[in-house]
Image 1 (cartoon, rainbow, N blue to C red):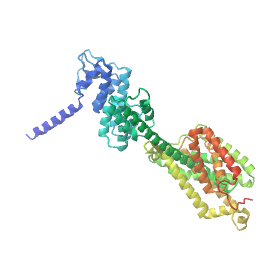
Image 2 (spheres, rainbow, N blue to C red):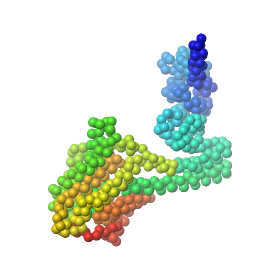
Image 3 (cartoon, rainbow, N blue to C red):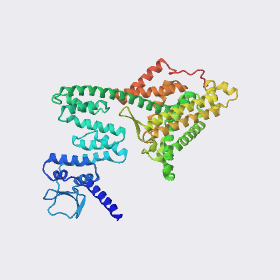
Image 4 (tube, helix red, strand yellow):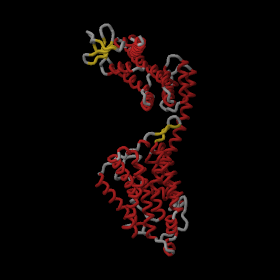
Length: 528
């Protein structure tokens, strides 16, 4: 007797689930009719059910697997099997059924409904992507589905996007009060794509109601102000990011050129060596340590520093040590070395670029000010540049090597007289500058592809940073790099990338004419 109540409960649950699985026949019937507006409306209403069965019907409609019987009922047909979506049951294949005709308009509505159903996906990333995709073109017919998704959504960011979508769809509502409420709801948005839509409402024949027009003017003013602030913040951030890249590229040159007086035209190739070392570390982890693949960057940092540093030491011991005090000869010699290194890399790795993928923890970004995305890789490079600058300052000012470097830089003959091994200091200093260039190559590998010509893109900018900041001045190098990065990012939208570079170069030429020592002059320099 105790088994009977349990069976009754189980039967009730089963009937309840079947009832939930069913789709009301009055929603299905228009799909078999000839009224195009009713068919599109039926698609939107079925999608608003937000059930797996609704998705199956829409998918069958898209795949031309939805058939209509002579009595107006529709069925999902798979081979010799048929499913009645009104009950969710398998049924015998009815006689006289014919495929539901799908024109371009209905197909577009079905595709939009299926993509909109991703708003109900269990993964947050899928729901966010679906909401962002609908922002490009939201159909008022999707309002029921969007409202259903908003009622189920718990993420604040996605909720805000869905509210904007509802307001955007209501801009074309027949009721003036609804349109006005929609316009006012958009005032908190930072999406510049809304401006043309609102502007169209203000044009002749766009919006007949004066109160809605006034609301649209106020909303446009708020959106423009928010977009302007977002663009300003974006230019500042990307200027700092570019400045950090220039700083990492120029910091090693500030030591070899600024402190030692060596015009090292192979500095860009040292950056390239650091980038290719990163690529090799990635291959090693991908092949032998796939479970720790995201940790390859941590291993690439010391590896790139030592590889580039050893190459620098080898160059200094074999070529550059014989050319101190002869800047023209160092320029020509290091230029030849740069060509040799580029050809060597082409021979080993090929002329094509290689890809260095960002670790998972550096992929994506953080959204601020409603729409400005700060990529994690650029945030990491800014932080890395700060760490490298602090480390170089500590080495030059708090270590015995730094003391010797400053002594040799200020007065080589006197340092030699008091027992400083100037040759060894030169070797270590050049190796340090080369190692820092290798670290810069690691950073550059996270921003784009790595190729044999990577260093050529940064060698001129590196020299500009060092010359503008002041020969041998670490603080001047930092200020010059960040300043050039900011100026470049603010000039590019106005003048274009090429003219911005030309304007910066002209400014540096004029500045050096007026102040040859750069932003900061070095005291007591003697390299004779």
